[in-house]
Length: 253
Image (cartoon, rainbow, N blue to C red; front, top):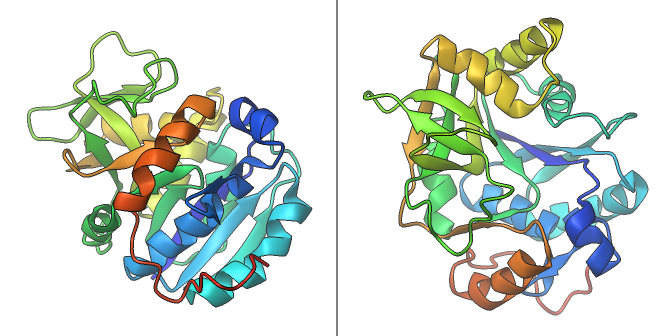
């Protein structure tokens, strides 16, 4: 099974404070990117395409070591213009994947069972499925940066975006995507949208093809700024998957 991990952006709020590319900022002794790959592997992923951009060389240099420690085959996909919205990362990475895939942000951490629940949706026939949390007041949610979701009565997405006036859930940063998602992003761009992942999900929602996977009650965090980084450092050790092949005694490559 395949995953697509987005690790191209600047991540200015955290990277500047940590003096490192955001995907290489550490939590519980490992980089966010390494945790992302390990979490995907623990859920059954065997190959991941990692989309890089800002400080790509530094990030790509870590991939062989991460692949060795996690047992997941990694392939870098470098964006020339990484300043564009994250939908462009999806378009680039999806070209390297045949069929459906787990889509993750490199700066998100998840409890062990959350991605297992997502991968259970891998054989879907169309559209995409997004992990959502209905506990929208959790301390680990930054209301100024969150992507909000309003659901239909059938549980599918009606609206998604950062500036919704009404919402009942928050985007957790993990998706199961069919090829329809990249096609929807490309369509949104052709119609004048900026090209975010949410633009593509909104197109799917308008076709009633954007499902949700309710993970309320399972731990997750978007490590996007120093405050969330400090919270992740405190909470993550209790929730992250077992290290498995990640050998603590080895220096990070």
